[in-house]
Image (tube, rainbow, N blue to C red):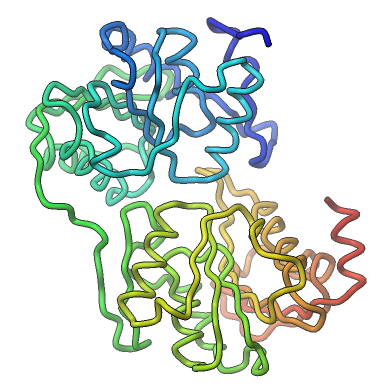
Length: 388
């Protein structure tokens, strides 16, 4: 296999298996700026001394290898689709084996002297990354956190300052900027965080990158209001895109004979859902799995699916992200099984649900959110395969 080196690498990067669209890219200005800022540091790195966190599709990892000679790069990606994209891009570029996937733990950061981070959206996600790196990395570590200027705030400096003695910012380029942190100050971990919600009788646990953190978002609350109406004969339920696992926990707590699966492609979400199940004494009745769109769940094996789907990919509104989950629900549901979903009322999801799953009706609707139930039928199965 021909190894792609130099700037030509970026021309070959793809987002797949994530959604491809003209306005969605596999490598952006932040990736390029981070690699340029890290060039001098990477020249002095030995094998295994570079840690890359939340590389979107592999530009940082493979760029460090192809452009700067990095070897045995450690990579921690929250999203499974990012891991799969990196693997595909590495194979096409002839760079498979140049990196290894690791979890976000202090042990995984041990001895790292350079850390490249694609800035997460949530401050708590950045806080957990900073705490992990400060605990495990080498004393002379340099952490570079890059992001789009419009998404970066002074609060990020403060978060990094809680775990590092020296935090500064580079000059902006192409609407991106890099924060530089040095001087790790190890301290106790803040995660997972926990919050009691007496109104729903649950304790929610969350790692930094989990959507909504320890709160219960209003979309999930809208679904919880319909809990008693959901397939009363269900023996197995699936919380699809589970986040912190609130829906799975609420279902099994309300129904002693029900067992639940909770799946998400986010490592932080899966760890949070498992911690939520344990915090509520439900760990033996909820199985939590990291996968992409229920790919690990056998077809026709579930009676009930609950789903609060995303409609953003980064800053872009992409409704087809929800369509993938609707098609996944149709695949895993038994005939006659139900998909209960909630979505922003401005979105036109009902026709897609009817086409991909089956007959769909609105159960609850407010100016903000709509709750629907779709019943799995065989005709939807044919249409779904035609779509895919």
